[in-house]
Image 1: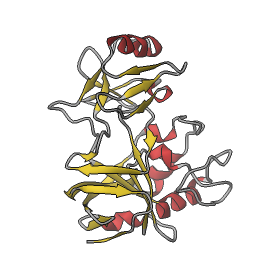
Image 2: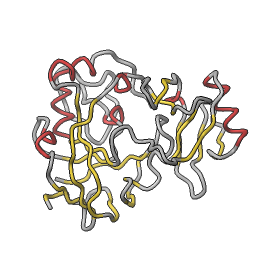
Image 3: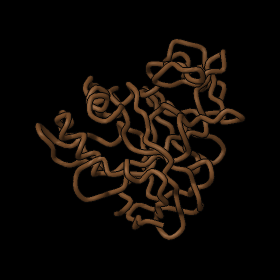
Image 4: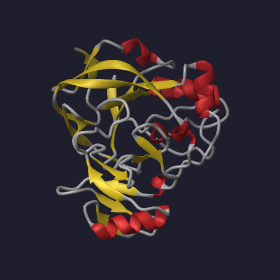
Length: 246
């Protein structure tokens, strides 16, 4: 097993960035989901409505990049603002059609379920076989041929770490309770499968909207895909790192 791809999302529910390496600490990848869009009621922008989150259509039109002081947010028209810039808040709100601010994490965590999300290429191939792949053959590190088209783009699932595993099947389901070493330093403990929502079917970053992925997971896999892990030993990970059992 090897680490195929590292993704982080400096602002929750916006598009993020693929990085060659990342530091991993107790709350996950450095800079991941450290900021969020917040409405006047204090709820965080998301693709769903819950006690903590408010559905805000349009967040996938923005991209965030990590920076030293605060993330840089790129608007659909190409303008860029620092996440702590009040003018940027107004610009984001104008695009979304609502009053918002961008806020760093405080007492309430921005993660949906936990600090680090993992997905395997084996699971990507299994879901491709169930759903027929990605229209247009969008490229991605975890893609593999399936019935009817190219593999599904892994960006849909917003996993932090994509691990290349041979074969096809939801193999990470069997990792719950196990320790996974990533590279020479980092050790993760897999806690539970990740429950999925409508966001995986939404159009994002060149991947067209669709209406079958969540349905396929609901019918065949309990609406879960990938797993959540906590950090047992912090350190640095890099694309190509060997992954093994600790």
